[in-house]
Each structure stands twice: as C-alpha cells, then as structure tokens.
Length: 238
Length: 116
Image (cartoon, rainbow over all chains, first blue to last red; front, side):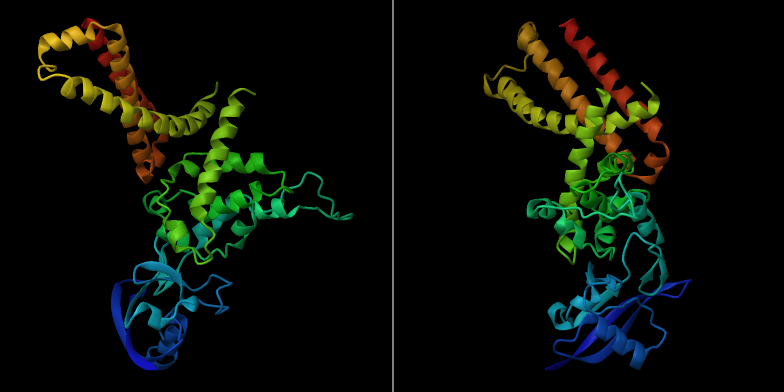
C-alpha cells in the first residue's frame, strides 16, 4: 500500500524559523525517520536531523511529531496520518532544523552522578556484587533510559525554569539510589533536593506519557521527592 | 542553624504541609459552609456571628482555618514564583517575602479573631 503524505517540517537556518511542506509517496511500514531520509536524499539535501541506530536504542532521533515528542525511527507514518507536523524538541535551543543543542540536558544528567558509587572501589582486585531478583527489579525499569530527551521536552517545569534538573536526570539519580549496590545516595539526595531539583515537579506526568521506553520518569521523580523529604527531615535531628 | 540549611528544609516542609493543609482546607470549607449557610437562615447576621465566635472552640477552628488557608496560599505562591527563572534567581527573597506574608496574615487575622 502506498499513499501520498505531507511532511510539514519546522526548519531553522540559524536566523529564521519557517515551515516547509514536502510531499512524497510513502509505503506501508515506512517510519518517520525513513521519510526524513527520503526527503534528504531526494527532495532537499539541506534538511538537518539527528539519527543513528534506527531501532529505538540510541535516542538520537527524538523529534516532535504532531505536537508529541517521539522517536522518529519507532513511529510509522501511517500510524500518524497523511499530514505530519515535525518540529525539533522543546526546552532546548535549536541549532538547525530538527537538531537541538542537548548540552545542557547532558550537563544536568552528569550533575546527579549517574554511576555506581562504592567506597570499596578496588580495580586491582575486582569483586562480584551480588543482587537478588527483587533488588534488581527495584531499579531495572529506570535503567532502560536512552537519554533521548523526550521527557525533558514535554516537561512544563523544564519549560518555565531553565535550571530545573528535569525528569531524565532525576530518574537517573533515582535509578542509582534504588540500587542495592550503590553507596552514593547521600551525595545524590543533596544534589536533587535544592530548589532546582525535585520540588519543581508538579506531577503533570507528561514525561511518563511521552517516554518511548515507558519507564515512567514521573514515578521516579515522585519517589525521589519522598526520599529527599525523609532524608532532609531526618538530617535536622542528626 | 545555617541559612542554607534553613532554605533546604523549607522545600520538604513546604511540600508536606501543602498536602496536609490542602486536605484540611477541604474539610474546613465544608464545615464553614455548614455552620454559616446550612444550619439556619440568619446565621450570617452580625449578632449570630458574634455569638458563634464567643465559643472558644469555634474561634480555635477559625484560627486553624486561617493558618491553613494562609500557608496553602502563600506557599503555593512561593512555589509558582520559584518555578520561574526570575524566582530561581531571587530564591531567598521569594522565600522570605512569601513566608513573611504568611506570618502577617496569620497574626493580623488572629488579632481580628481575638477582638470578638
């Protein structure tokens, strides 16, 4: 099955923003990313977008499709309709066309120390860290984040306050705080409990709605918030 | 207690008390409507209001109602302001002004209650 579709793309050339329509015939099963490649190869070589793995693993191709952040490689054109409005992600500065500057997003991610912290790190004599299946399930879902930025783009709190850590970073912090092998909980709780941290979330849960991996960042932020509140109230009595 | 510590505990306490006062207000508003509109047709006459407020239990209820509503309102305002970049840059001023307004509202309203 083939059908003519219109890709309305919000473009930016470094100076001005404008919408441009591209018409072409799409095949059944064709993804939005394949459509973008078709345009780049056949209609307009100047169209800029990011993509890498084409299978929903790398998180590079997140764009807004008809107002909702999605992975272009995991969205089929016919599932959306015959007119697709494609825009760059929100809450990040646009560099060119569909490419946004994700530097701030990654700096926030880095700020919450998203790695296992152990006091007994000894690379000369590595030891095995055992975990029960229950201990694994406490954080496993949240470890599936591909850092595509869809949650950050949909988050209304990130839209109004630019230094808010955002759902992805707080989810990464929770993923390690909920890990039985980790010993850096205190560090991370101090990092996420400032006024630019968990308190800015209003639980709109838009992040969970748009997450292509269905990992529910909103749940992680709420849990992190409760963990922070308990930690900070306890710290008064210490 | 250092200033940074005070600022840090304001956030979790603000969040917890916002929920508690929200739930309390739901019950308080229903009770207030009940005694002012549903018990009798002349419950809002001046004499009746004075008579009601001469009861220390009612007075205490209204003071608690006032404290809950003021906290919920000004802490909510604080959160809204801190949600913006402007609020983030002026965090200490936002915290101080909104909490001061809360205290002023409770003290001023409390003084009005005492006069009855």
